Image (cartoon, rainbow, N blue to C red; front, side, top):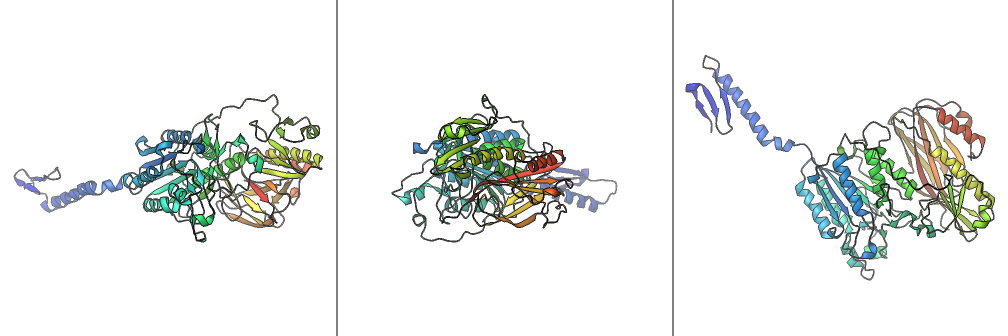
Length: 579
């Protein structure tokens, strides 16, 4: 109620506690009244509408399952993963401590995890930002109904999971399955909030990249995959085609793709046990993922940093799933500023020799005599913990050359012993071009192989397509290093125009080649130069360039002389068709 006290020419609005004076010397009362109504409206606006315009809050739910009810499933890294991420979010990205919930091991039982997910529907508001993280075991089957956040397969494993292969329903009931348990909550949250999800758990268990016996090696830590032993029929009686990604405001990164397991490392880069994905992600989020050095880490930068480094070091390839409506060119955590932190991993104990180390598991006496003095050749076993750069294992009438991440580099007939030595020498020489980086890189170049982002496994006779995008107008140099170590210049090519690609305009390069022998691990490296590079034309269409030869040495020198360039690389695995 408003009371007008005209004796003192005061216009008092008691309820809103606003005092406005009128002029008693003939000023228009109507004008004063209008101004007063306007001011009352402003007060009402601030009281009624301002709370709805509050600044968006940042929330995080972090789950780490190190210890399980079934102790045979115990891991080492998940609790460290959660604690390190919590410290990172508050110290480097400004998350309020009160907005971060952590659930560890015995408290990470299924009902409690789901309850905390649902709690976010009440504790967060429209416009808020939510980070969901899980570190622990994952499992899978090849049925479209058995999935985590997308339409492939998989589930995350809570503390109270029951590994009972005699009772499929018991296992199904104790898992956290995406469509049944997570999808309804995320669909509700994403309606008016943005959600970033990271699962450091196995996306699937068909480890086609790894090398049988070498896979059992403890050098990369324990697998975060649980084989339930269930058939697809046990999971579902139907087999439906995969649908499109169901979220608009949810970005999802998984530790590995559907052909790989994920690793739980006994010793991460800070000296503590961590998941391979999380260990790399923490380093990236502290500044290493800012690959164009502009002070901002975008989702695109973070994912490409993870894909490149986790694949190279651990043989698993993180996957990014999103709807095109989710912009990956904006800063991670929707935070334009992050506190960059100089991060240096503990230094490993130096060996007597800094030369590349080749571990020979079989036929050491025969093979070791063939290697030159510029390689450190040691005798070992496939399961010991000794670090190595390349391992040679005999499998019947073939030698298998394996990488530290467990991937097969290539295989060769045991009769071709000198060829094995030459392949090893080419591999180490070829790594020089893979390691080339511009420490002052000012723009990014992106590279994708195949029609699915993040795909790394390709089969015989498949056509290989490439997509390249640059943050600057640039001239491209695209190289392939095959499993035997030979290098091919894919671009520039006589059939492809030499004009620079345009900034932020992706180009698709179709049918540059088909998958064929030799099979194993290949590398694709792209350089993006601001200016046309002199000397490259004469190397165009040089097939199977030998890293031990003069052409490769010339190529290295040409690149090293250039300034202001960007680069990236991808590791891919090629496999022979099953006959």
